[in-house]
Image 1 (cartoon, rainbow, N blue to C red):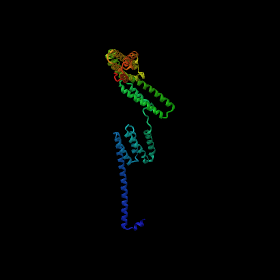
Image 2 (cartoon, helix red, strand yellow):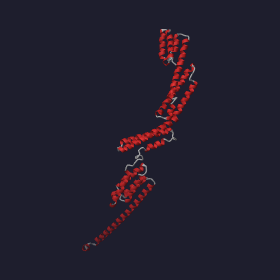
Image 3 (cartoon, rainbow, N blue to C red):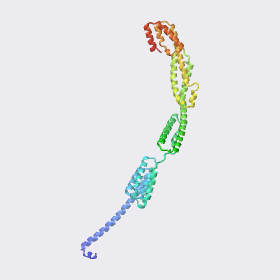
Image 4 (cartoon, rainbow, N blue to C red):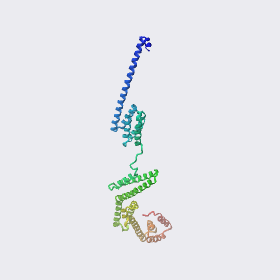
Length: 381
């Protein structure tokens, strides 16, 4: 080697020395560059992780998510980045905000891809921590009413039974209870319950249904007292007032009295339809009000009074027509306004006698016209 160096020219020796010097300088420079790059990366990671902590403390999970993605890109093998990712996933999924929960799940999935970049002696521990957090995040969570599926229905029932609530609001709550019972029934039919679970479920369902029936009866009682009973009492007051002033009108006042009776009957029938559901539900106050002088009895009496008034008027008209003057056809025209289908046997008999008397005394043409008037009742009042 020494012999070969002796043979080199001065120029070649200088070139060789310069080459060695350049090589040493380049190696030293590259090593220093790598050291500086590593230190720069470490500082950058610390800045990113600090930002992640600050953003999480302020609830800015989207910004923390972006900072973590940046840290993963720069230093995928840094254990601190992996730990920060798990911490972010744990905190972001604790709240009820859907966006934060979605970001937490996203970071958790990405954290799994960091495990192969970690040192070999840390991979097992990291995988266990990752899987444990995954079980917490993705295991089915128990709903508040999973152990007792009727908890919601019972809460609604308790609220519904507050007498301070308006009856209409309580009716809305009862409808929600009915919907909840139907929903739980569908779930029970679609779920694969064990025999003992099915028995417990239907026992609880029956208990809640009985409470629902009781609350519904209480609500109906309240609705009856607030809405139906005042209208019934107002109608009865009108009937009582009519009985005092117009129950026995003169013949000239009969049509007016019958119009009032018809109005009372129509209103009474409407009130009777309103009270029917309360009677069917067994509301005590409604059943008590229906006893004795119930609505139907008042209606029946008004209907009979109306027919009696009509027969009084018809009989008076028949008697007056019979003794009045004028041609037979005019008398038949006056009798044609009477609806003989509404007449009692006595009044109907008198009507037939008087009609036949003047009908026989009329011409054939007048008889045809009189028959037409009686059938079509064109002059009926």
